[in-house]
Image (cartoon, rainbow, N blue to C red; front, top):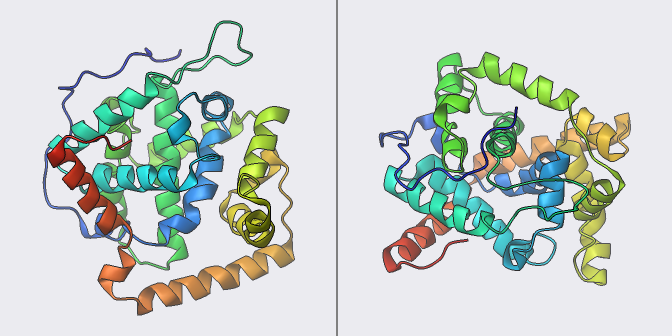
Length: 287
C-alpha cells in the first residue's frame, strides 16, 4: 500500500542534535560528485520518480536544464541532512516541500506520481545512502562494524529530511539490505524514462561540443558506479575490460583522496553548508 501523500508538518520531530560520528564526517567528500549522476539514475529507475523528474514543472530544479543549480541543491541537502542541526534540517525540509508541491501528475497522465509519496521519498533516500556506501568502498576507507551501523542509523536523516517518518527507515543494515534487494527486483522503466536516463548519463543535455567532449567519460563513470541490475534495466553495456579500466580509475581516485588535505576533501560541501547557513539566516530560498 502506498503511504499517504501529504507533507510532514513543519514541527515533525527529527533526531536530536549531537556529535557527528567520524564515519559520517568522511561522507562529506569531493568524490561524491563522481557518484552524483549514477545516483540520479538509480533514483529515477523507479518509473514514478523518473516521470516526476522528467516531466517536472519546477523549471529551476531540472537537472537537464540547470545542472549546476541542481548539483548545488543536492549537495546542500546532503550536507544539511547529515551535518546540520535539527532546526537546519527542518528548514531544508520545508524548502524541499515548497518545490515538491508542484511535482504531481496530472489527470490522464500515463504514470501517476506525487512528490509527497513517502515510499518514493524512501526510495530516493535509500539510493542516497547506497551511494554513500559505494563512495566509502571506492575510497578504500576502513570502518568497523559499529561505525558502519552508526553511519547507517545517522543516515536515516536522509529520509526524515524529506517527507519520511523515522519508523519507515529500515531498522538496521540487515533490514536495509532486504529492502534494497526487494526494490531492485521491482525496478521498472519504460522507453521514455530509459531514453531520458541514458541521455543524462552521456550529458546529452549540454551544448554539443561539451557533450561530445565529456559525454563518453561521464557515461563510463556513471555506468561503472551503477549496480548491474540498473545497467541491465537501462540497457547500458559493460564488459570485463570496462570493469578493469574502471577499477584502475577508482584506485587512482582513492590514492588522490588520501593525498588531499582535509579541507580540500570536504570541498564543495563545506562551502555549500556555509552558504546554506547564510541563506537560512537571511531567510532566503535554498531550493
